[in-house]
Length: 415
Image (tube, rainbow, N blue to C red; front, side):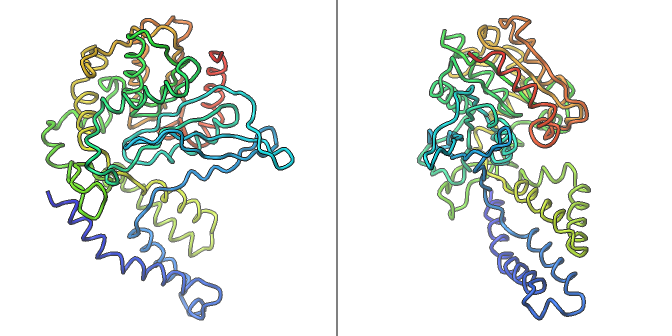
């Protein structure tokens, strides 16, 4: 019960040491400091910086997308908040051409809603996804709010609420013109949201792109899937869900804390993270500043985590990983049965990574078995050879192998 409070106490206790390590790193590395000339100064500075980065707090990064290059020309990009909900913001990235100092929005490209995961990391993890999509699309993205920053007075947030948010965002953009891209965890609630809209006779998105998601975790179960299936739901509630301490706006709200999620991420590959930090230390000593800066950028994103609403987390564990309600056709959302077979005006593209250790092969592709109302010629699948989980939406493989397929798929079904 007091785990979160103990974590905050430890963080406060570590803060002076962290500040001291940051100052020490600068004193022993700054060109104008006499300490930088003492024997072993480079190693001392490197050690201090490593200590600082291990102990520091990591705030939510910025998207930092201010321009986009298209056909050799650079265009300014403006980030705008379109809708603000207690637990999520809908953001729009608008591209402009600067004509004699007057900003004019670029041509009418297809609208894309990127549904980012609410599963630990901030939506900025999809920065590369957004920046690449901006070449040819109007891009919106869900920016989930850290649950510890949401006052308890705003009430709980369940998986059903997530689905309602997605439906509201789709309607706002225009259900009959938007293309929805869901990355990892959101594939399940996005499929549910569109299924319910189809069952009601509403317009549905022009296309759905589902990437590395747990549609049916009974297919090629991974270590993540096994953990969720082996423990009873009460174990997750008693061990992983804790009240937010009093020093945050969401005091008293029950959440799955970000620091626990981060510990789980690291525990999956501890050797890799140890080696990465050791290489960072060695690069600082050798003066390989580009590699050191690459390490900083990666861990500034990787170590920045948010708290998930406890009720939403438990709903997801139960519905998706334990009871498999979606693929079994037994999922009811606020009294309505989720029927993916009712979707008939939306094209479907599923994407999986060959080496994905979070959502195993076949888990995302399972959507095709459920969406029986979509004609076969409008159902497509891509397995990215050599790609892990993150490689299908970020990095070189995303930009050179996956994105061209996504771009052409969207263009094929754009009005």
